[in-house]
Image (cartoon, rainbow, N blue to C red; front, side, top):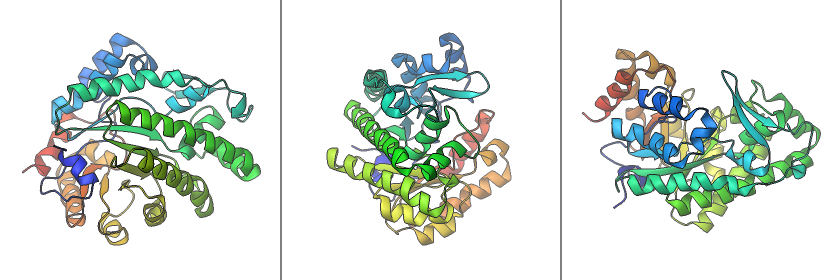
Length: 338
């Protein structure tokens, strides 16, 4: 029997809201910090499938979440495309060579770098109960491209935006390569046991409307269509963070099964503007979860009220902050399960 999260993603409204949190496996949990210290670096943890499965399951065991999100990183795709990947302490990921200096065609693809991730999914699915949905994911092409071009994260994604304007053919070729690798990667996750997948477009908000259509909506639409054809019945969640007023167009034109909504968007507006039958995921502010208190309870009630007449997955508007108190997560769950 499918769990409540999978039923919701398939368009069935639930009396008991399913809940999971983006980045729910991670540094706010003492059990994660202990395992990370034992294993060493982040990438070493991701590539130890048994340890990565343990990290994936930790928040499900502690909180009873309805979904288990694969513990991995969106930059596994550029790593499999042939860029070197490492994480600088306190500074974040690095990719080499940055594609401001080289073309993606010069890279030596290493698709075997997906295999350990598939094994993590297999292990998780084997240990989860049938009512908990196993979620796979990939970064959307635009967001992944911003890292590949610059070789690291950036505030304004200057290098990728410039390349997209200056040489749209070259940039489109890169987007196509990311699409192809992401399709392979997501199908592999599904075949290993993922029951739904999420496309993270964390930097969608940095684009003009025309670029948003070209580099966010179009690639995600192609990916969603291919996934639906290749693996029918597996829901695809699209999460274009920062899309704002462009979110309704994203929902209509990409063909995703559900839309993740960030915390900057009014849930009442979203409920009015999106197709009434479309499942919505979100959109509690992670900073409010960090703060806690009575304002947190009021926000939970407002979000639930806004989405009460449509399928709704309760989630954050982005990833959980590493300083979030466990008691505040428990406060959310108590409010939702009264």
